[in-house]
Image 1 (cartoon, rainbow, N blue to C red):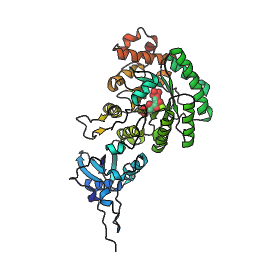
Image 2: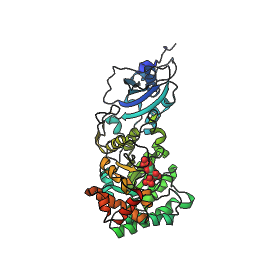
Image 3: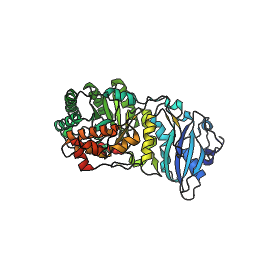
Image 4: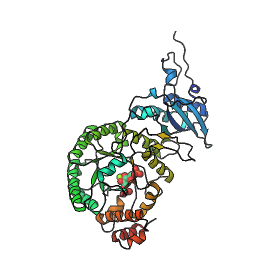
Length: 438
Ligand code: CAP
Ligand code: MG
């Protein structure tokens, strides 16, 4: 008879355990279900996300003890929820596979009856884990080099409304935006290759607009072309973008998934393209503070996977829900070589990026010339500012809207109050008349 093997959830809690330098650590916020102790809940989380199961077994794999995750620290938040730190031996994970990591630590555990709420707040990667990933190909410096912009935020505009333009109309509006002073035209996330505006036809028109605008302004321009699609179609689009001589692609990486992003990153390497990461879908699991996955974790995975740009929200202004300090932390996390948590931050841990290039943070959502100042004050000038409605909605049209954004940036960087600058800059004045300023 095989030896009886009892998997007891408490075996997965060991408050005396000291994580080794190669452990991968996950910080969970755990709200146990009624009648379940934190030890039971934490043990189940660690077990179900590593080598455990729900019943006793009569067999035991030889590597069981070695591969067990350990919940090694528990901190009562006093509201029915706890922070729980779990250490995972690196051998649990397949090399270079975010899908495998996600299936483990972002997987079944969210649905267990033993927990009422579970949120993955942070994942701390050991150097060995990071070394399996490429990180950004271009990073902040590389993207600045493509566009030859060194001393100010990079500017992008999504033509609004989201959908409805034919390729010719889109090309026309792209030209207006670019010649007005914006650097990049960006597709909206749900603008793909619909019948009324097929991808290649649109690309062709935008590239014509870029050529013309570059000649007229003497500036470099680009197109954040949305290649988000099924894999084969995405491959075709990435190749087309490169063939047409554009150096950027945009991917809605949470809707296509981590494996698709990985594939796109490989193709981007081949064609030397920079990847703009749009994050539609994130709020479905980042918004609830007691359940889901934090944007902090998504940003970390995005840097590992190799995004060159990533949307992080708008600190304190704009149309999307975002907490100022959190947005500032995302920017630091993406740009710095080593992330160090603020003194009052009990959740996050230090993360050394092991030399991965920095990602350019993207602030977007309800921005206009009158609310860019606090964004730059809080995030610095090493950002990409996406102003969509706030350019297209300008009372004198998109070209004036683009000019107004450039004027606002000039004023902010030179420390001149917007009202003052607007006296000599009509486009800015008209934008402030419409939207005001903060
Ligand atoms: C912004 C935007 C972006 C959001 C996404 C939109 O347009 O194109 O998708 O910024 O949010 O469709 O809303 P506007 P986030 O400039 O006209 O608001 O960047 O927070 O992921
Ligand atoms: Mg959008």
